[in-house]
Image (cartoon, rainbow, N blue to C red; front, side, top):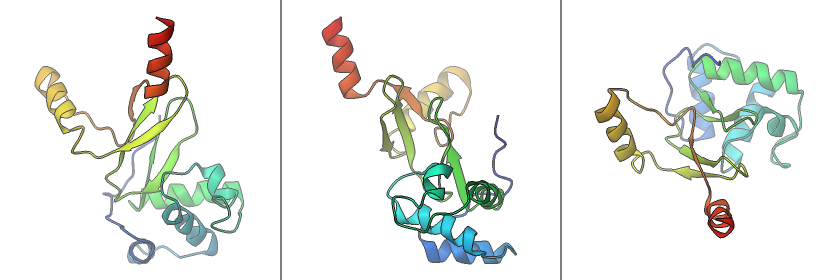
Length: 156
């Protein structure tokens, strides 16, 4: 299991604030570290390390996968980056300050962002029933997307 970030997550709403947060934590802004951050802020959603290394769809220069993983680990330990797990697929990385949570289809792997305010009732119900405080920022809610749910209903 992955160890959570060592530092408290930092609100980094944009690339400039992420770069500042990295410097404020005494970390160097190497070109590889900058590429990782640029990739995370250039895309609308979370990315795998492999997508970042390939250049995030042409939005940043490609770089070495090992370097991407090392920098993601360092940035996560600094509280600037976080990751989520979606089923059995590779981890997805995004800025730590992002409040985004995910829902994922357990059949086809489709995913969608969900505002944490939407899942507040789910968290409250689970907390009331068990005393646990669920979080969906590291492991998303799983279920069936509309297409897979329709397919199941039709096969019914």
